[in-house]
Image 1 (cartoon, helix red, strand yellow):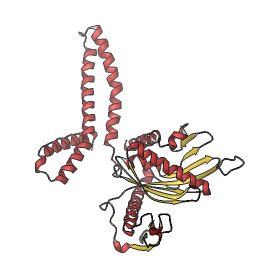
Image 2: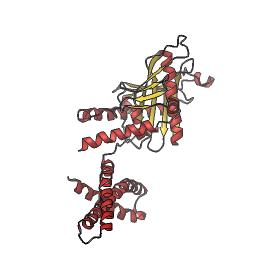
Image 3: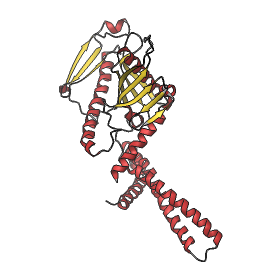
Image 4: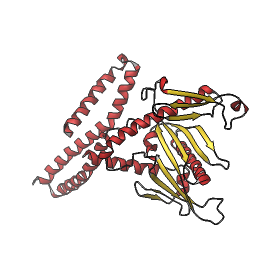
Length: 357
């Protein structure tokens, strides 16, 4: 299908949706919501098409004025300037349209499950994992997202062996999905008497939160064990079998939850995480099938890939995928992640545009 045919289909569908929504009172609420979302998604595309069409019309008009021998010199000069400006603007408008036409990641608008785990580096890695977890918590606050701590396994001096949170809000997964991978820190630990710089790491996984319709889980595939909670939470937590461990037998995925006093709540949280991991597993399988055709692995979410280094002595953060270095480590750790997120999103869009050509 040519680009012109594709644009005609978009315009035709937009007009059709407009007519359907004009008779909203005859539509069931769920259908009205679905059509309204499709209409809203197509609106920026239709607007971009309109801007390109108007710009092309103006280019033709200016070319006529410039070529017309009867046009006075001053008018011709103005038309020539306008023509140059329009010809510079057209490629920008066309690139914006191409971006809008790129296939959307179905998970982009979903909420996310964040998992941070200490990697190599012992206690220092656990302290760094805690720093990262708080960094994402602050970022969520800056974006107006809801950040719900689901479980934390602490060490004795304030580090996190692992921590999990649910993040809800607009465009959460779209902005956080490139955070998955190995994060490395270079700094002098407080316990290091000689002042020697240590390197340690933590692993981050950002999973799109899955709905029941996204992942079908057969109860026969689950083994559910209950046990007494060993973590903090008070007397009542430790005297009842409220902790839950769910094993998904076909994949071997195991999820444990013990932060809540209620077995029912722990089970619900564990199922939420299990559903997200299974959904992510399927997304990874599909991505692996496409990997041979991809020029970049920016969006791969490979858990073993070292993606970013946080260097404390030089107060810098470097994202190795886009070769971006920011000399404002303290602000990044305080949740100012938009500059990194924007660069990663732009790089992913550029790569997908190149593949689409």
